[in-house]
Every structure is written in C-alpha cells, then in structure tokens.
Image 1 (tube, rainbow, N blue to C red):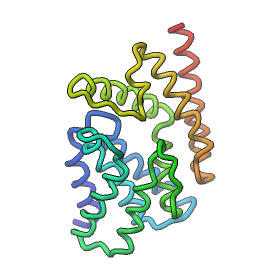
Image 2: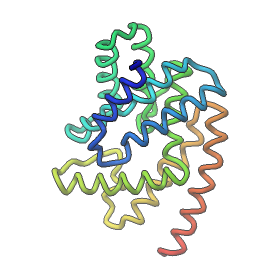
Image 3: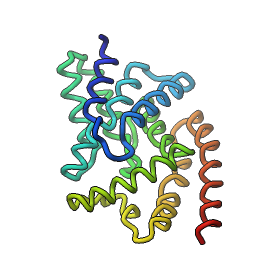
Image 4: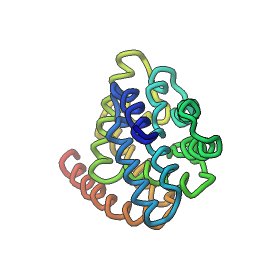
Length: 210
C-alpha cells in the first residue's frame, strides 16, 4: 500500500466519529478539488494530495480541547509523515500548506500548493454542498454545546436563538466573502457558479421565512 492510501486510511479512522462538517467526505472533496485546480494551475500533485488528506486531521482534538484545528492538523501530519519516512523537505512543505489553510485565520500561504489547498477548502463551503455542510455544522456545534459546554468562538452564529438568523449571518460572514479571498483563476471560476446556487437558495429562504 502506498503512502497516499495509508494516509487515507489513517485519516478516515480518525474522522470516523466526526459529528460536524469536517468529515471524510469533506476531506476527499478537498483532495479532489486540489488535484483539479492543480492540473490547471500547477503544483506538486503528491504534496497537494497529502495536504488535502491531512488538512483537517486535528479537528477532533479541536472539539475536545478548543484551539485551532489547522495547527493541530499540522502537528499530527508532521509526526505521521515522519513516521512513514517521508523526506523532511516534503513534510515541511505539506505542513506549511496545512497550517495556513483555514478561512477564519486569514493566513497567507507560502507556496502555490498552499494557495490551492486554501482555495479547495474554501470552495467546499460553497454551492449546494456548502449549504448542506453549514447546516450540519450548526447542528453539531449546538449539540456539542449542549453535551459538554464546548463553544466554538469563530462560529457564534451557530448558537443563535433563531437558527434562520444564525444561518443568514453565516452566509453573509463567510460564503459571500470567499470570492475576494481566493488565490487562483480556476478557483474563482468554480466559486462563481457555486455562489449562484447559494444566492438563489438564500433568496428563496427569505421569502419562505420572513
């Protein structure tokens, strides 16, 4: 079994009980987006694939301890890849991509591969799948708060008394601001089409709710 499939199995096992939107489905969509964008824009495919697979491996720790899953994921990825005898330069490259991928931190990637991973992760928050993920995430965050008091400070909209208002706040705060923060032309093309779906959905939701 090669390093890609070993990594896929490793991440799948860790995220098997992930209650929110950072599950293995998200990881593999980001991986696929990384490869598609990389075909158009360039970049090392092995770095893109491994960074895509490992970019959210620390999310379970974030649920348990708070903090930033991007940094947890970078730490876990570094240890895992070193144990698999991946060369140090490649590990540093992958870890840098993972550390800078998160939307809410506003970090600037150091490489093309980092830019592509950041874009791919953001694009998966758009379109029909983006709407689905946001609602799953809101439900999971509300459940975690009820179960153990965990509150994710960067997602306070999830705890709104009126969930419709919380969702509307999320849409304005994240998806509709993503276009201006994408790094590549290919990513902006994908985002343009996905945002049309979100705009239509939000307009219809407002008509039905208000």
